[in-house]
Length: 131
Image (spheres, rainbow, N blue to C red):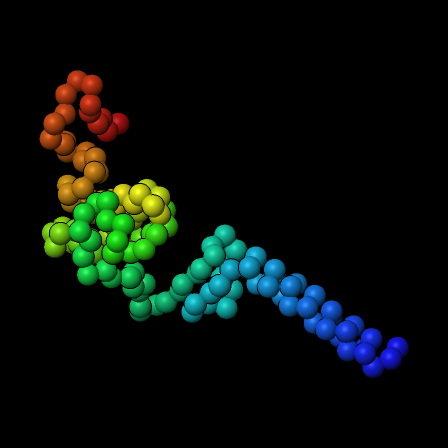
């Protein structure tokens, strides 16, 4: 092979190596604080004395705010408040173009959770029974 063919051969091999590397990296889990991340998780965070800090957004203007966060992905999780009320964890149950911010239940009767001790507004068709 002449030097030009050798250089082109090396460039092709390098490109194939990069392509294969990126493909393998995408398929693997990432671990923070662990040497062996769980294969079922894309991100596995392990710690004995620290937690995960969810992004904090100052405030949303409403449950359909599409301006504060540009194109929010479906299921995007944030900590915020809406119109400076009801601070908590919210996720986008809508689309990037038409977000619907839903507050995660805290289990204290605030939100959309069902309580085994009863909920207001129950009748014979809308009820919860614990067995």
